[in-house]
Length: 371
Picture 1: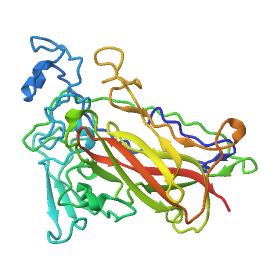
Picture 2 (picture 1 turned 180 degrees about the horizontal axis):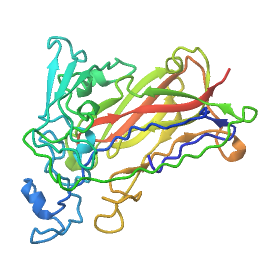
Picture 3 (picture 1 turned 120 degrees about the horizontal axis):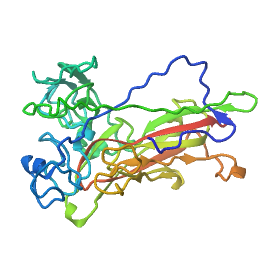
Picture 4 (picture 1 turned 135 degrees about the horizontal axis):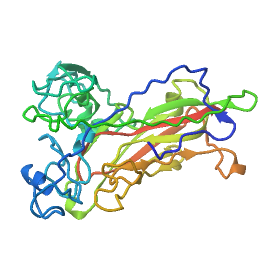
């Protein structure tokens, strides 16, 4: 995330031995509405009093307006929405399911999803390649029972192919997130973008630096993604949904049997639903780390941050400040040392005024073994 600081306290580093190349896998979804007008919203079946061109012309509205959405969208024609539901990868009528065994209990439904394109989907532009062809992806999720996760108890749709309605598996490479009945719009206006990276480094000196170890754990046990159910009564204002899960340090370090000293903790979650992450010592109920995303306000006038590159994009998290420990003389709290048997608990809070799919609750830790 562009505003999230990545690094380590003084005296520590992550060695990279003479790299010759870097491979990245950016995840982009084109949700830009090229016809952001009052007239366009009316054509989509919405309406209401909206700022914009009173004659329904081509003047962009100051209120966010999504482009076309599939029928499975959880925000279709709803007021108060400040983001496109395409960013959460809804499964559409272009996708069919094949379940191995319909009779198995909830949480054991596996099989595959098949994406079928339309004949008029985009062809390659400028050598960039065209839209996806017929694509088949296997589905297997392993939702763990309590105390690892509450997903099975909640019958979370992401646990089973039969109830799966959106997430990573419906966001294959170059697929369209519109229904089979919807042609891909604006094919003469492809989205052009660029990526910029800054990589800061210094020479690793084993006499001065200790190499960090990376550990990871989904705060839900498994899988990493889950559905956030919509609030039953959103008219009361912002609604909140809480989920939690527990694990041990030894499980996180793949059975090492060793104590760890945490240096950095990053909680991974998605805008616009993520509100807070909390890591607790479940044995003592002490909070080890708490993270709250910083959201943009869109301030600066109509459309500010909506299609630009600034850090104030409405409803998007510009950063999730990590938890960071180190030398007290540098103004940092001392690193927590956790034994292998320590039970950790993740508590995740989301805004569920609208429902969300493909949300994540994953922790990334950096530290050293403390023995």
